[in-house]
Amino acid sequence: MSTASHSAVLIAVMSAVTVLLRALPFLVFRKKVPAYVSYLGRVLPPAIIGMLVIYCLKDTAVTAAPFGAPELIAGALVVILQAWKRSTLLSILSGTAVYMLLIQLVF
Image (cartoon, rainbow, N blue to C red; front, side, top):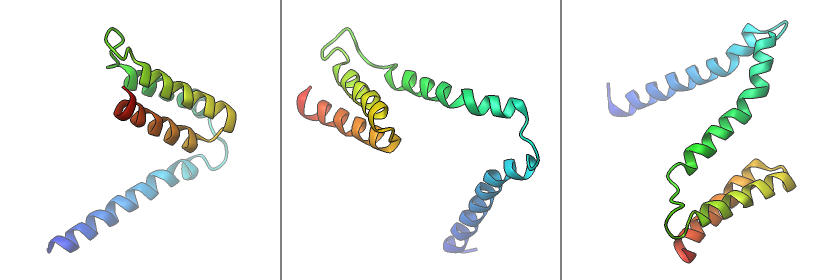
Protein backbone atom coordinates (compact mmCIF):
# COMPACT_ATOMS: atom_id res chain seq x y z
CA MET A 1 0.00 0.00 0.00
CA SER A 2 1.42 3.35 -0.99
CA THR A 3 1.87 6.19 1.46
CA ALA A 4 -0.92 8.25 -0.10
CA SER A 5 -3.47 5.43 -0.01
CA HIS A 6 -2.41 4.48 3.51
CA SER A 7 -2.98 8.09 4.61
CA ALA A 8 -6.36 8.17 2.87
CA VAL A 9 -7.47 4.98 4.63
CA LEU A 10 -6.33 6.35 8.00
CA ILE A 11 -8.23 9.60 7.45
CA ALA A 12 -11.35 7.71 6.35
CA VAL A 13 -11.28 5.45 9.41
CA MET A 14 -10.69 8.37 11.79
CA SER A 15 -13.52 10.31 10.16
CA ALA A 16 -15.92 7.38 10.44
CA VAL A 17 -15.05 6.83 14.11
CA THR A 18 -15.49 10.54 14.85
CA VAL A 19 -18.91 10.65 13.18
CA LEU A 20 -19.96 7.46 14.96
CA LEU A 21 -18.88 8.80 18.36
CA ARG A 22 -20.78 12.04 17.76
CA ALA A 23 -23.94 10.22 16.64
CA LEU A 24 -23.85 7.49 19.30
CA PRO A 25 -25.55 9.49 22.11
CA PHE A 26 -28.43 10.38 19.80
CA LEU A 27 -28.81 6.75 18.81
CA VAL A 28 -28.60 5.42 22.37
CA PHE A 29 -30.86 8.04 24.02
CA ARG A 30 -33.59 8.33 21.37
CA LYS A 31 -36.55 8.38 23.75
CA LYS A 32 -35.44 9.86 27.06
CA VAL A 33 -32.14 11.14 28.37
CA PRO A 34 -31.27 9.63 31.78
CA ALA A 35 -31.06 12.01 34.72
CA TYR A 36 -27.36 11.33 35.32
CA VAL A 37 -26.51 12.29 31.72
CA SER A 38 -28.41 15.57 32.11
CA TYR A 39 -26.63 16.17 35.42
CA LEU A 40 -23.22 15.55 33.84
CA GLY A 41 -24.13 17.88 30.99
CA ARG A 42 -24.79 20.62 33.53
CA VAL A 43 -21.81 20.18 35.84
CA LEU A 44 -18.96 18.99 33.62
CA PRO A 45 -18.42 22.10 31.43
CA PRO A 46 -17.71 24.46 34.37
CA ALA A 47 -15.58 21.78 36.05
CA ILE A 48 -13.53 21.26 32.89
CA ILE A 49 -13.03 25.02 32.44
CA GLY A 50 -11.88 25.27 36.06
CA MET A 51 -9.38 22.44 35.55
CA LEU A 52 -8.07 24.10 32.37
CA VAL A 53 -7.58 27.42 34.17
CA ILE A 54 -5.68 25.70 36.98
CA TYR A 55 -3.55 23.79 34.46
CA CYS A 56 -2.74 26.96 32.52
CA LEU A 57 -1.76 28.93 35.63
CA LYS A 58 0.12 26.17 37.48
CA ASP A 59 3.59 27.30 36.34
CA THR A 60 3.01 31.03 36.87
CA ALA A 61 5.86 32.54 38.89
CA VAL A 62 4.28 34.89 41.41
CA THR A 63 7.46 35.38 43.45
CA ALA A 64 9.58 36.85 40.65
CA ALA A 65 9.05 39.67 38.16
CA PRO A 66 6.60 40.16 36.44
CA PHE A 67 4.73 38.41 39.30
CA GLY A 68 2.13 36.81 37.04
CA ALA A 69 0.95 40.15 35.64
CA PRO A 70 0.58 38.99 32.00
CA GLU A 71 -1.49 36.00 33.08
CA LEU A 72 -3.68 38.08 35.38
CA ILE A 73 -4.26 40.80 32.79
CA ALA A 74 -5.08 38.33 30.01
CA GLY A 75 -7.27 36.26 32.34
CA ALA A 76 -9.17 39.34 33.49
CA LEU A 77 -9.71 40.34 29.88
CA VAL A 78 -11.13 36.91 29.08
CA VAL A 79 -13.52 37.07 32.03
CA ILE A 80 -14.66 40.62 31.19
CA LEU A 81 -15.16 39.88 27.49
CA GLN A 82 -17.03 36.65 28.23
CA ALA A 83 -19.35 38.41 30.69
CA TRP A 84 -19.91 41.31 28.29
CA LYS A 85 -20.13 39.73 24.83
CA ARG A 86 -20.86 36.05 25.65
CA SER A 87 -18.60 35.01 22.80
CA THR A 88 -16.22 32.22 23.73
CA LEU A 89 -14.18 32.55 20.54
CA LEU A 90 -13.74 36.31 20.99
CA SER A 91 -12.78 35.88 24.65
CA ILE A 92 -10.21 33.15 24.04
CA LEU A 93 -8.63 34.76 20.98
CA SER A 94 -8.44 38.19 22.64
CA GLY A 95 -6.95 36.78 25.84
CA THR A 96 -4.38 34.79 23.89
CA ALA A 97 -3.44 37.79 21.72
CA VAL A 98 -3.12 40.12 24.72
CA TYR A 99 -1.06 37.57 26.66
CA MET A 100 1.33 37.07 23.73
CA LEU A 101 1.69 40.82 23.19
CA LEU A 102 2.34 41.37 26.89
CA ILE A 103 5.05 38.71 27.17
CA GLN A 104 6.70 39.68 23.88
CA LEU A 105 6.55 43.49 24.07
CA VAL A 106 5.91 44.62 27.63
CA PHE A 107 7.28 42.14 30.19
